[in-house]
Every structure is written in structure tokens, then in C-alpha cells.
Image (cartoon, rainbow, N blue to C red; front, side):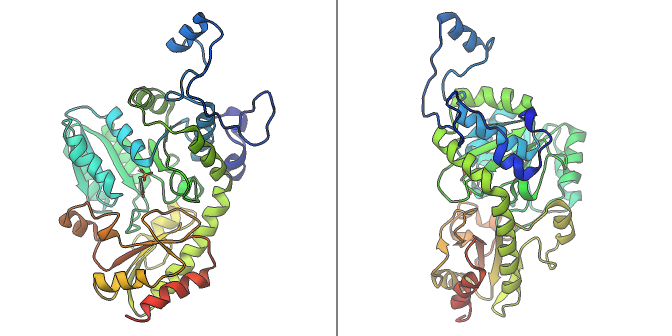
Length: 397
Ligand SMILES: Cc1ncc(COP(=O)(O)O)c(C=O)c1O
């Protein structure tokens, strides 16, 4: 983190942290689309390669625009350091592969993005890493899973989760991880540092799919890991600089600009999210709404304690089957039928047949992702237009 900004407030950090100027004194952050950097002498090159002297070498390792993004996000999350990756899945895969070795064990929530489970299961399994999926928010279940294996190395969850909006007690699970020496990672995609600070609650590291709210307008892919200097700048960096899933400078530049408006966007997303959740909960053709800031949510009190807003993502079950869910989706005219989320444009999707379709039926059932479930990632359009968009399909059921 840039020490210069230690005393600044969150909204200011989003705009000012990690800013570096060239000798031209540009006001907006500079984009460095260069593969490599030139050294003044062979000796300087040698010293930079061994790390004896600081300096940029090659953009697979580091790049000034990527550096600025990393510093800004680390400051916003309250972490010592950040390492940026090409996508959110690259962040998750690189974390797991750089931290775990054969014989180690991963404990993961079942309520995570489908591909995350594929990384922890089939992919890490090929390298002798075992895993257990916890399909519960009960602290007893987490305690049992974390202490069940002598080599639990990594514990992973999303809070709120995708698409069920389950909320996990981050501080309590962090304490369990500390006791057994496991690294506790929280995917903070849905809340971002604006609404939730997992590191302050005791988590060891944070994962981001920057392709979501950090960009906020659905333009570029990106990912990040935020945590200690040791984790980000040594363990993960040494793996990533060799294996290569680094963030492109252009994407880092777009994300830097995205971070500047993140606080106001997240507050506006939360306002629209809560309004749509209340409206859906009152609709006769809706059986259930999952949104952390609805008083009916089973972990409402915990969500209010951990988060300063409910965020953009909600899911709801229509009264009916898959056909009914698809009918509601197909009658929308404003919302985009697409799997992405965290965009100013509202998106709508049927998780069971899209984002979570590669999970087994049993895993989907265990996570509660049924055929009548619809996920909406609420954008920043006028809330009345969004309600009218859903009413069109719902009123015909
Ligand atoms: C919560 C969450 N984490 C991680 C990812 C993976 O990110 P990416 O698509 O940038 O690889 C996603 C993707 O949709 C997600 O929703």
C-alpha cells in the first residue's frame, strides 16, 4: 500500500491511491502498453533480474499501469499488497496452485461460482490435492470440515454467495482457520471493499473477479488477490510470473478508472437491489427472494453486521418450473440475458442451465439451485423500468 495514502478515507482512496506520474505530469493515470523495459547497462539489467535493484523488466512480471491498479485495490481492501491476474478464475487457480501441494486439503463452500468448484475438485485433484465441499452456513459444519483433515491448507468461500445470496460469518470462520494454520480466502466480488472488508474481519486474503463491479461496465476481464506481501508478492507472484496469467496493461487501466467510481456505484446498486428485492417479495407469482438485506433473509442480522449494503445480486424462485422461469426471462426487454454481473446494465440469468450448469445435479440440489430460480444482477437503470420488465413475464404465469 502506498504509505502516502494511509490516512485517507475509502472514497478518496478509490480515486487517489496508487497514482504514479511520469515526467510529463499527466493527470489521468498513464497506460503502458509495452512488453518489456529497457535498461541503461548490462549491469543494471543483471541487477534487475536478480531483484538487487528495483525496476520494470517484462510485463508478464510487472507493469506500471498494473502496479497502479494493484496498489489502489490493496489500499481499498486494507491489504498489504495485491497481485493482479488475467481473470477472476486465474486468481483462484493461481492462489490454489501456489499455496497447495500434493497431500494438502481444500475446504470450500458449495455456494461458489461453478468454475471455482471445478478448480478445487477435478483440477486440483489431478495434482493430489483433496477437497471437501460445505453446503451449509452453520459454524458447526465449518468447524467440523476445517478440522477433519490434518492438512487443511486453504479455506474458501463467497459471501454473499452466487446465486443464493447466503451469508457466511467471516470473523468466526477466520478464527477456525487461524487455529489450524489454514489460509482463509474470501471472494469479495459481490460486495467489493465498498460494502465489506473481509481482511478487517480476519480473512487472510481476498479474491476478485475484476470483470464484475471493479470494472463495472462489462468491458474487460481481470482478477486480483489481495493479502499479505508474503502471499501476494512472493508466493503467488513467483508462480504467476512463470505461468503467465497476468493482467494486461490496457485492462488494468480500464479497471483503475472503474475503481474511481466504485463507491458511488456500489451504493446505487445496493439501493436498486433492495428496492427490487422488496418489490419481488410482494409479488404473488414469486415464491422466495434471496437478498441479504431483506429482513426475511435467514442471515439478515449477520449481513447487516458484516456489510454496509446488500449489493446488486439477488435471486428469486418463481411459482412454477423451469418453463416458468424461462418465460419470465424471455419477457424482459430492458435486462440483458447474460451470465455476467456487476455491470451498470441489469443482467438476468437462469443459473441451473447457464452459470451453474457444469455442476452435477446433486451438487446443484445441495446448493439449492433449483429449476425455478432466476438470478438478477441489478444495474443502475430506473427501478420502475426494472420492475415493469419483470412484471411483464411474472404477471402472465
Ligand atoms: C463470484 C465470482 N467469482 C469468480 C468468478 C470468476 O471470474 P472471471 O469470470 O473473471 O474469471 C466469477 C465469474 O463470474 C464470479 O461470479
